[in-house]
Amino acid sequence: MYKGKTIGVVIPAYNEASQIGRVIETMPDFVDEIVIVDDNSKDDTVSVIEEYQLKYPRITLIRHQTNKGVGGAMATAYKYARDRGFDVAVRMDGDGQMAPEDMPALLDPVVDGETDYAKGNRLFTGEAYQKIPKVRYFGNAFLSLFTKIASGYWHIADSQSGYTAINKKALKTIDWDHMYQWYGQPNDVLVRLNVSDFRVRDIPVTPVYDVGEKSGMKIRKVVFTIGWLLVRLFFWRMKEKYVIRDFHPLIFFYLLGLFFYVVMILLFARGLYLWILNGYIPPINALAIFFSFMSGSQFTLFAMWFDMESNKDLK
Image (cartoon, helix red, strand yellow):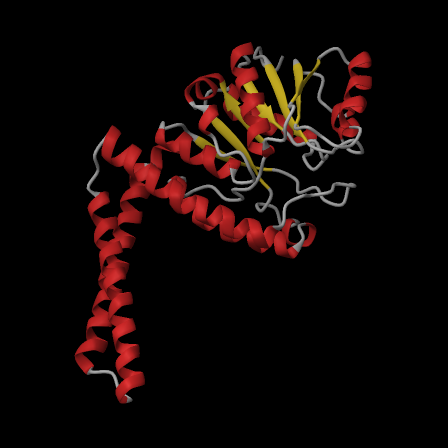
């Protein structure tokens, strides 16, 4: 237990035979149960975990018969943690990239009731740019920017961090069966937390790389996949939070911004066609493009500002 609260650590694992032992051995003593979900690994992950179970009785192994993705493994783990009644569930990965000494910093604000969900932020320290591979660093920064817009948590960064702690109330509220099942899972959770008005806080953690981990994430492909996911999640959050649950006029600002951007694109296409056809763009067409761009930008920025104000109490 930690400060009188039961702590369960949930770990999705896929082909982590070389790394999972280190994760288990360095687990803090205050953790009550280590829940590992094997996502139908093809290597010796299961046999390694079973050997550790003989020495560490607090390990629970759940096996998937088919590969469901990291999000699917986390859905299984979170439902188990919810049903077990843990006060806090900490998510770690099986590749050893999450420093166990950072766990108390994640737990403190959740256990003390200051926030409902704490997530690690590897970008906070000055070491991040040196330690994180550059493609991952810039891909993460790009996704973090769009996750701010999609989730409504404008104060968070490092959206792809999987080192998190979630309290019992949030565990019971989120519908884990509908959570995204692949690498966009952390982004999906943030949007669902915002719709339910849960507080989220960033906690600086140490970036850990080059410890023997093997990532299956292809960042160039994932950026576009998660980017499209964030677009869909943004519209879903607008509908759920600002139309169905509690109407907010920022919806009109976003719609007007979208309308003027569409008009701008159509006018730009018309202007380009006339330029190719006649060698010039009519001044009125150019003025209309500029007006549409300025109007779309102003309406969108006002909508973002309203969204930020609406969520300022969720820090």
